[in-house]
Length: 417
Image (tube, rainbow, N blue to C red; front, top):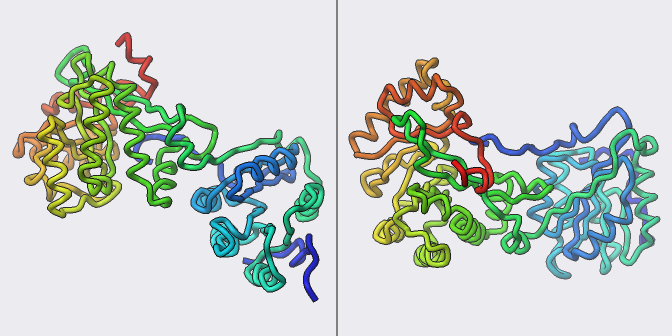
């Protein structure tokens, strides 16, 4: 006998069966919960109208509702926020994709107690039973009555929702295409100063990608992870590059460098990357000899001849290079004699209070010696006190960066500096 629409597939108490520079943090599932019953509900459907409509209809005090329109953003929420409930469409990429079913195991890996409700407009008894076997607790066939879903969510809560838990909150995870075109994808900047200047003159500004929203994607680490999972990291990098030039050109034109981070994997884009820099320079009127590309250590830079050729081509265009976050994750130092960077940046992990820590001090001194051997400028990151700035200057380190000189901020904050 087939299961009727709205069937409960398991008892409601079924318990079958997570940065470098200081960034915004995300609220975890444990933090979202309180002594008073609350719900953290994740809604997943490839149709934006459906997720937004459901979110507004289900809005209640005591509920935080997060909407996602692809599986990659939903995975990020499941990992980091551990929702109490998930309402997921079975099919997210057409009738032959079963991402909603596969997502059950993904959620259970991070949060075994999460209750999962599957929804679909085209399903079978076998599909419903498969969902139950994987750990879903209920099923709704589209179209369904919103009060039916609301009743299911309430039945799966041990006590009535209370406004004392928290006011209702809706969080939308925008799709990547929307982010790429959004005016909210707008960088912050942090100054780099000359340590031998008593006024700590700003000689450069590092552009730091930001998606200024109230979603978890405001954290750049999460934003870039999302793009990587979508296999569209170059698209995000190119969009950030354009915004860095557009906003930061006014700073770099004032006799300073504009430092732009580029993930190691993006150099495989070859001519497309070179064209992106050329176009950004043209539209912003910022000469490329005022630009420094920081190769981040969040990925291994390939020694493929095509990648090295791309870097050489960018250098011929006037762009300088820096090895960023030395000492963290992957190390690009073996490529120093092939790329000839103009700058080496010591990770803030080793820069902060290095003068009081023998291990950090030794590492900083070794990197300073290396920079002199290869005729690079050394930039010490993580300077948070005058004592650290003074110690770095006494060693002969050229440049410094850190909260002592300025927090990441909008370009307008530096216009009068």
